[in-house]
Image 1 (cartoon, rainbow, N blue to C red):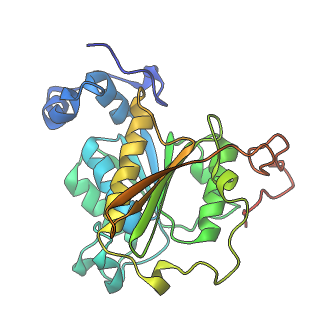
Image 2: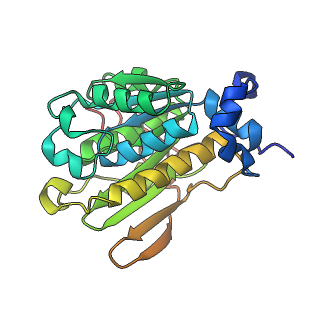
Length: 277
């Protein structure tokens, strides 16, 4: 069986699977596009999930189950009872606990082979370069525009692919923004919407199952980037209408005038990149 084309994981970080790992990940290894080589890349991967809410819960659970070697979880908040309708990392007994503590406990119980890094902090312009550097893939589980723009700009400037997801009411979307191979998030949305123009999930609601669907798709995109040989959602965005049972694919083009990844980006020195606080 030929190996899949190299993904974002350097081959020197791979090592042979142990017998226990071969048993645990047997179904992954049987997939022709994955094989033992792909599973070795998964085990060597460093994936950061920003947000332990609805999207991050589903994505993190699937990434841990798949055997990602190092899995980071960023979230500054504590578990609330209203989270439990969609944030499946957490349980009723976790209400009041830091989401990162609850997430680490759940993910470690699922797969003790995964190194889970709990980061109970809020991503800011000051800490983003340090926090995001060194990860192979970043999964966007944010739930507000300032955080999403900050994350998108930071990933583009650091050269880290970002797997984007968003949900509202009964609609969701997923895409991969990798400025080295295609558009970044700001190419799609140059500026944040004006306050009040787009309601939040807290205001308009979210069908509880929807973040699970989109988060699972984000996990799939992250694994595709790690393994290689697949066609990730770079330059494309999938929009799901869960209520109508329809999926639409929309093209996304790189913007030459993008202030983040265009021909004349804002420098990352004394000038603050767009969206960074």
